[in-house]
Length: 428
Ligand SMILES: [Zn+2]
Ligand SMILES: [Zn+2]
Image 1 (cartoon, rainbow, N blue to C red):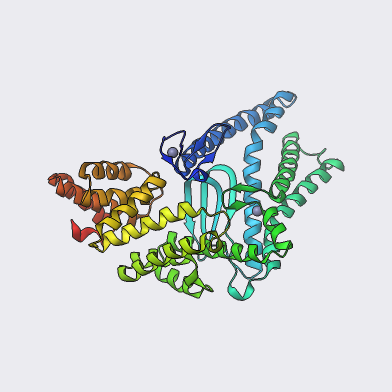
Image 2 (cartoon, protein in one colour; image 1 turned 60 degrees about the vertical axis):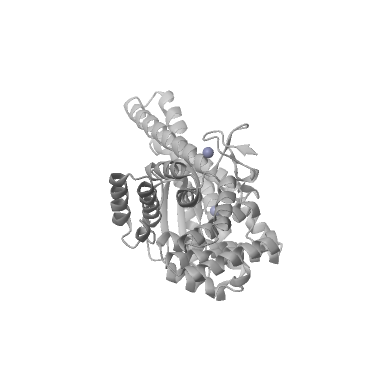
């Protein structure tokens, strides 16, 4: 059992904890909170420091101190701009080669702002440490070279920026420029060079995520198994974006167009999710059982790289418990056991807490279920309205059972406001 340095929740699945400093390990939720906080602090320091130093350098042009300050504080901002350029190059080359990007994120951690264009969810996140572009090509364009071009292009653009900056310095073209602009050009060059190396250096960044260079190497080795898994990962990225957009009918069409989807536990699990959202519970339950069966028989073979079998088992059992709960299944023992397994293994996940708490209210400890849900709805997280509505509806059920009618009406009203078609409303 390992436990999170911040919230102290523990789980036997050690690989889920993310290391930050040598002895600090965080659950994914707390990790996101921590880097969000650090990211916001970093932005504040850079902007304040940079403003003061630029002002100083303009007012006292002969004082070296302020130029050093500009070099120091512009580092982070320039790095973020360079990451942004890097991701946009991935995006551009994907588009040029006939593919599209279901999601492009600048930064990681808490969401600051997002908007949807026709095929892409664009996100700005609080911590400037990383950028992610999901890439997808239609079936007839699934060739290794397209992925190679997309993967390599971004780092190579960073390298060309670095080379251009150094050429400007070498040929003394920056001499005629204002010293401040010269400083920026040098920082820009150095940062882009470092970014080139860090993108091409083959390594795993976090579980399930490796650098451009690591992916390029595997494709060059003509590792078919890797390419299949890479492709599977990209399909699931598309599915993930469709879920974020709430486009469940499109999700079903898309998954059914994927080759061999019925033998992939994650594809089946996406279908289950879509059918639950569309209220077709019988079909959802079938796919739920199928995803668990496949996971148990094939293990890692049928999963994208970096997946944790244990974590997926917990998530699938949670989905099963939720489907059984929605169906008012007679088999409450199976439901409670499945939800309990999920909660014991991933106790920080909002969806798992929600299922566990709702089932506690109906079949277990009423007050514990209520208090878990109260905590859940008071959190400000990136959670979609449908899920929030379900949490409020479950909470209203709990209040009814506890004879707190005022609270029940308030929770019910909130649920209706968030999603008037919420599947749990009729149970209150
Ligand atoms: Zn935690
Ligand atoms: Zn990249």
